[in-house]
Amino acid sequence: MIRDITIGQYYPADSPLHRLDPRVKLVSTMLFLISLFLFRNIPGYLVATLFLWGIIRCSRVPFFYIVKGLKPVVMLLLITVLFNLFLSRQGEILFHWWIFTVTDEGLRTAVYMAVRLIYLIVGSSIMTFVTTPNELTDGIERLLSPLNKIRVPVHEIAMMMSIALRFIPILLEETDKIMKAQLARGADLENGNILQRAKNMIPILVPLFVSAFRRANDLAMAMEARCYRGGAGRTKMKPLQYRKWDGIAYGIVCAYMIAAIAAGRFLPLRLWIF
Image (tube, rainbow, N blue to C red; front, side, top):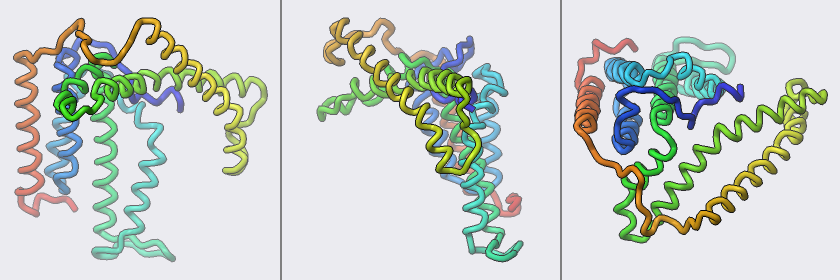
C-alpha cells in the first residue's frame, strides 16, 4: 500500500505536457478541478472524461501508474459512496431493508461523487507527474507574486509547498523500510482490533517522526550553510517565459471549460442516464 502512493512524485518523460510552463499546468489543473463542480449530469462528465483521457495520452505517463495511485484512497472512496447512497432520503425509493434505504437521488449522488473524487485525484496527480518540484515552486511563486504588494511571503509559501511535495516520496520510502524492519522482528501489524492495531503502529510512528525531524534539521542546516535568506533579490537560473504552445494550451483548456459547462447546463434532460 505504501508503494502505491504516487501523489507528489515526478515521472520523467518527453511529452508536450512536460514542456509546458508550470503556470499553465497549475492554472489548467485548477480550472479542471473547478469544472467538476459546475455540472451534474452525464454529458458534462463525458466531456470531462474525454478531456482527461486526452491529457493522460499527452502526458505519456503509463495508465497503470496513474491507476496505482488510486489504491490508497479506495477505502475513502467507498465510505463516501456508501454515505451518499444510504443517507440521502430524497427522490423515489428504489430499495429498502431494515434501516437501509436507497433512492434514485441517492444513487445518482453516489455515482457522481465517486466519479468526481476519482477525477480530482487523477487530475491532481497528472500535474505532479509532469512538473518537477523546482518548476512547481517557480510557478506558484510567479502566480502569487501580486500578493507581495501586501507583504505576503509568497516565496516562503512556495518553498514550503515544494519541500512538502519533495518529502512525500522520501517519507513513504522511510515508512516502508521501518515496516519491513518491524515485521522482520516479529511485529504483527495486521491482526487484532482497531485499538490493538493503533498500538502496534507506535513502533513505526516513533522512528518515522524522529527520521522526519532529523531530515528537516539537516535540510535547514544545508540551507543556512548556503546563505539562504529568503526570496528577496534572488534570481532564477531558468526564468519562466510563455511560449506559443503555452497559449495553445490555455486555449484548449478554455474550450474544454465552455464545452463542459454547455454540456452540463444546456443539453436536454433526455440525454441524462439517471
